[in-house]
Length: 289
Image (tube, rainbow, N blue to C red):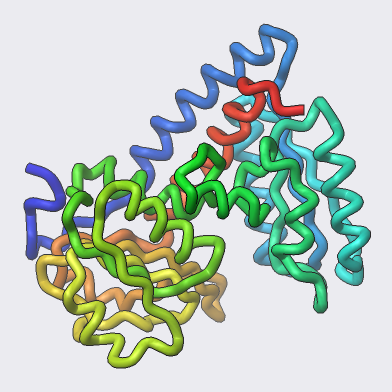
């Protein structure tokens, strides 16, 4: 019986098993590339002193190392301007030994993420940051989607949760999660509504969802009143707590009121990291240069 069929049982949609499977495939592909003289390499550009960002980047580098992907962290000053960041991204785009590029947020004050990301070669844009990648995704043309958005859909498919014909509601309209995940769900024939800060009566909209995706960055935004008991809820939120922990956008008490819910941490996050690595080996295999 699939998670989608066990309505009312509070199934936890953890990402560990799916992430492990992706990493195993990535490791095999990375080994084959290395044997062929093309070891995959990922570069992460950072222009912040934010400690939570530093922790996340270290976790990516550690995960990359375990599957045979070299990971270079390019640290720029937290006062870097747009030209400096774009110049770094162009150098990496022109470097044939680099196959994947990530522009990590937050960026210095005054620097537009979308404008800076235009300097990333779309063939190396493994986290779908370049607006060109989002445009290709919307048009149904092959591109690397943002890994977090793809992780949402990958988890739903891993647990055999039907998407075609289902009502999906996405809370959040960022170019990192909200908009791209809406396109990915549309591609799988779901009926999609995107909610945001101007949505009138959020409860009325979300409570009609078969699949509810929370991606806003507000702890506890989604409560029991927002969900249908048969809903599958994907919590993309990663909000730091004062004690160094993480909580999602969904109140933990919702778990006992819905068919299934992803935990935070341990749900979407592990799959996101694994997909970033998968995108990097794909870029290497496709000969990005």
